[in-house]
Length: 232
Picture 1 (cartoon, rainbow, N blue to C red):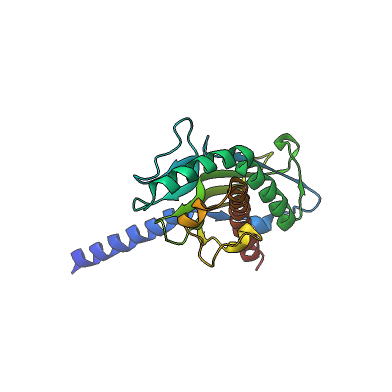
Picture 2: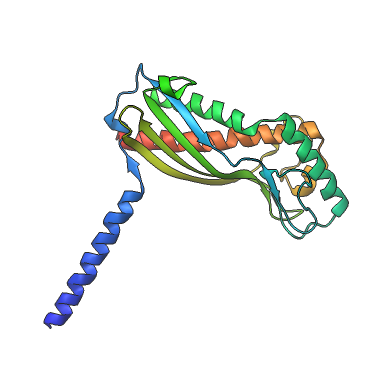
């Protein structure tokens, strides 16, 4: 009987230790600081270049990678259309700086939620928002499947002077692309890879701008939710 009790105790202690360690994976001390009248800067880490990750009918751009802009599955029906889309993607990526658009929008929204003043130079900031974007883009798993915006990022809010971690979160979001992203462009209710192949370079550029807004808003929304929880 004692052996059973010891075993049960060991299991319970082990389980408690796992819970304790798992709690170390996130933090939320957002309510412990006053951000009013203070400054916020953001630093980012993005993949060096966008890259197309594709199936057999969509081989990536021969001269340079385009990271996580469009992902297409292996059952694409029309190689010619896919080839044309690849070239238009490369051209659109040259004209739209997704990372800069994402960065500017995220800093503005995050500072608004905190009540802080956004600044461009981290040396002038009281608080730093560190954002590591692992992956982001447009994912269409099949030629006729609904396409999605997706983002996978790690975010940390720090007090710059002390380096104290105030808030940390992992953001993984994935949502259908709505036709509204393309403005007046006649796109049906479901945006597919095939629909993308019919778009012009300018229209694909509009989709990339929509991607930057989606990724920034997804991360900022997590910060807003964290603030709400901390202030309850």
